[in-house]
Amino acid sequence: MSVAGRDGGVALPGRLEAPRPTLVVQTGRDRLGALVALVAGGTYLKSSTTPGRRVVFELVEMSPELYGYEGSVVDAAFEIRYPGAYWRDTVESTTSATPLSGPSVALTAFTGITAPIPDAVIRVRGAATAIQVTDAAGSWFSYPSLAAGSYLRFHAATGRAFVTSSDTWSGGQDVSGVIDFGGNRGSFEITPQYTTDPLTRSGLLVVTTASRSGAEIQVRGRGAYIE
View 1: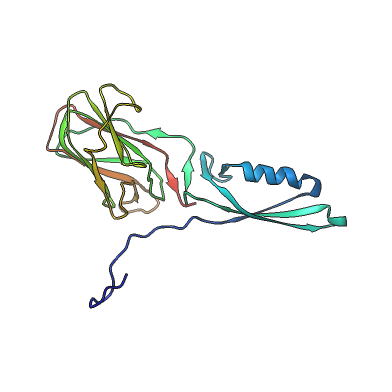
View 2 (view 1 turned 45 degrees about the vertical axis):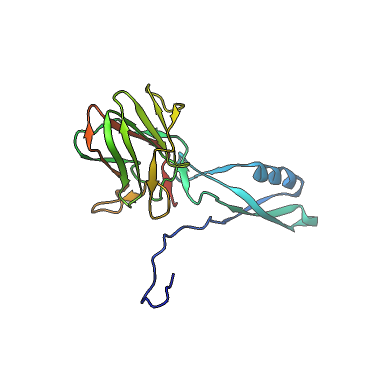
């Protein structure tokens, strides 16, 4: 974005558009209706090259082409869209609990990701004060104080947070009004990072606290990929 009286421009956070690939399926004309019903009623595609990954899709447009004897064969072209932009793991994974053994602790998660994860769930067990979790790309969330034996659960997809008194990943007291979060794109997300080899990637979080006792952190979610 350009600004009057300033050289260059103001950097804006980038975003990927929803991909719109076209699938072409050859079928008998008498089965075209069943094929259209299958595609129109579908919700996701499975990866044929990487088992365990899928992408949510929606049908945008269809155009059949007839050829052969009296149009008995159909090339049906389906333009689809990936609203979420990325392929995702089909199964959620949860990291082992990482102790918050000092004022700054690093945690890696989601080995092999190639795209940001916008909907992870991060859970911190107290006691800890001045809790801040920061992704390597700069997004973050913070919470002032968590009592011993309590669990703070932050949902990145919604920005909401809950506190429970037991080891659970659901329910609890809504403390969304106390949580704070932000980042270059306005929300918390886990992004792919590497040190020396770009073939070896993972999410990297840094957890800082002012004080802590028996505290630990875990992350739950599904990996994201551009391919």
